[in-house]
Length: 417
Ligand code: ADP
Ligand code: ASP
Ligand code: MG
Image (cartoon, rainbow, N blue to C red; front, side, top):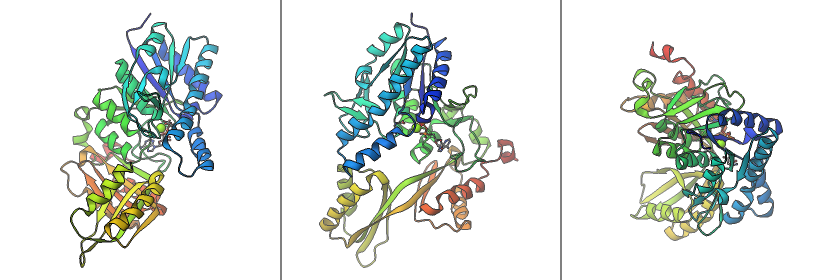
């Protein structure tokens, strides 16, 4: 009864926000199921997860990771069962599965657990009976039976992981925009849709805040060579954006250095003021933060004056409270003057494989910000990206200025000329 081809389709929150949306995605799935064994991976409906996080905070300002996972994982279970019921009503055989049933084994870590393996027997069993399998995304189970979640936006990663485990021919991520754009089309309506983007560029864009794909899903797709596309569930006839290998991206030699602009408005900055300039201080600060599970992003250390330095760094806003708590302890241990923090910062980044070996890109970005009267607080670069930390208040203005500076709204032909 198994068909030759296996396809994984992922549907994000907005795509399953209400009954009408669920019927729409079921029609997309039914069309696909005519030619392939079909696995659907679904997110919680609309803004359900945000609502659950808020609810948790009404009871505890810093909820334990385990309990938060118990709560947040429920959102996806609701969608999976409703989608399956809807498929039955439309005359199709389907079964919904949550993580422990589907064999989604993760590491023993809460709130952003990584997938260790997927025991696919149960999924395969349902597929071989000709059923559409509807998986609850975002969740996992540890080897000792604890419920975990993969981190916000993690259903993309569930989908790509199951596509890899099943050897699926393709994985389509259906969302509320019709592909990956040069920047968030909700901020810049003139942003241009990219027909193709390389795994490398997509990984940078996603890691730097373009939430259209969860960064770990891109990493997995690259590792397992998954045919990955981003499409709109509201415009299923559109092919969307295909994520492909860098070696297949011909445009990189021909066109612009910058492929896209990403904005991360969930950053917060902390600074240690008056730290003694002695060896081992950075190690002490960042080892302590890491061992408490706080990921640090951009780091800046000032030049020493009279044996004293300042060290600033950014973290995701969700970890700010925890980071402050730990930093207060570190201040005492290292004999620093104090720790300060600022929640009103954002990180703006440009990404492009065409940036490799092309000088002057950073200065153009800084000039665009200067011309818009925006101050740069921190800078960090890698081979194919440049990021600046700026005031949150100017975040969207900064995207506009940079997007326009690099002519990203223009067509490829215009840029070549
Ligand atoms: P889903 O609920 O389907 O997972 P998300 O909200 O996680 O959807 O991701 C889709 C959103 O990502 C879009 O609505 C858009 O606002 C945002 N986005 C940010 N950067 C980009 C980009 N470069 N291209 C497309 N969308 C982007
Ligand atoms: N529902 C989860 C979230 O909102 C996972 C996802 O949508 O990918 O983060
Ligand atoms: Mg998402």
